[in-house]
Length: 205
Image 1 (spheres, rainbow, N blue to C red):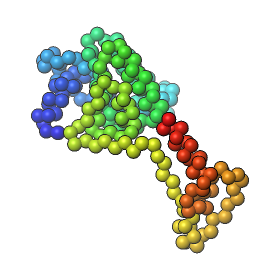
Image 2 (tube, rainbow, N blue to C red):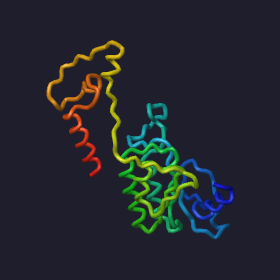
Image 3 (cartoon, rainbow, N blue to C red):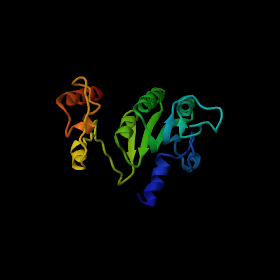
Image 4 (cartoon, rainbow, N blue to C red):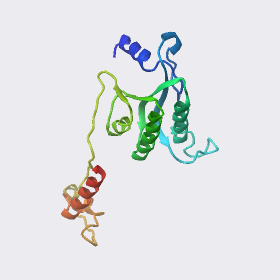
């Protein structure tokens, strides 16, 4: 993106940072005649556990807490000055439960009359799932979009083990108990394929 394009983006989209998590300052909206836009940056993991009272406890202070994000959206919904919110996704580690909870908060904010804009330099499946709850999805010029869908990758090591002179020897109780398949087989058994395909079909649905 050129410097001129970046300036246009700053003026049109993030003219004022009413809400921020460690973000830099943009040009004041009142000097540009642009509407006031809230800004929330999702960076790193989102913590949903109970916050620690001591910063020295394991996990304390890492990433953002979901309660902070919810409070920011609540403030945006109740603010008469804000016309909308820009969410910048920056190296966010989004789980499916994060996406569902954030999506519900974004939907509530939109019902309150605020426009939600999502910006990311690149999009994969988690970012796009979250962006489905927004009014507008923005990507940097030249950014990439990769949506592989739902899939799993499995590794079968029996051939490699035999190549180094090791013969796997397991006792499997029941056709659908596949804990030993990775070591004992060169490919998935019919029963294991039924298990995995059923799981993926239910996730897709």
